[in-house]
Figure (tube, rainbow, N blue to C red):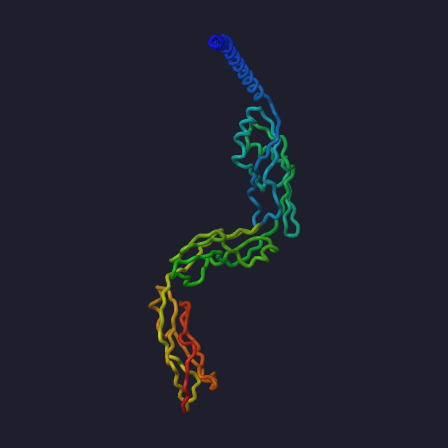
Length: 329
């Protein structure tokens, strides 16, 4: 067994080492040959097609595009292999710019504008945007069609699309509003006829305990332009506290020959009010009354009415809501 192991080590040293060196030398020559083949291939001239993004500028004033435009152009290009390789590795960083002032033809019809752009007539202009070392042979589509219509302008209201969760004892003191509360929109007459307002994108607010103002973008409408893209949403939030007053009851239409005794004579009004308005509320802001003409003598109680109250309170409660009465001559 020991002799067999010794013989195996001898064979590995003598033959396999030589074999490894031959493989290494072979791979080196293959690599060198591949490199020179690659360099030779890159020096040759090639023609290929690529997809290239495009952007359109200088739309006609007071016009709106009503047709779909290609977002990519197919370019058939020719150049040396190494230039095409470099171009493929670095292209699409910037789109081709198509200037719409270069229209080949323009036709006006029924307040609409029809244009077409023959791309082959603008190969040299577009070629300059790429590189002079790559030649554009062909551009597809060969014709780009544009269809425009006249703008109309309309003023519409802006509505906030928000939801608000408040901290305990906090509430809105007024309506949620937008500044500005309206904007001008531009678009086709058939589109604008159906639009009476625009809204902000949806926004949710959590645990609000004070007034806040936020810039919020408007929700886009396809093929409609806005005079503003965002508005300020005002959310008037404050802490509220409970308050109450004893308010005397006023009697209306009581004949001079009669007297009316009420039980009780005063009503407790309870309400919620913001801390900033707490000291602004006085008993004179409330008026509670009963109308003698509405008394049903078969009923021992009469329902009271509140005819006056301040605007900046919430959750008004009356106690009691009915009173007993005695009529005397």
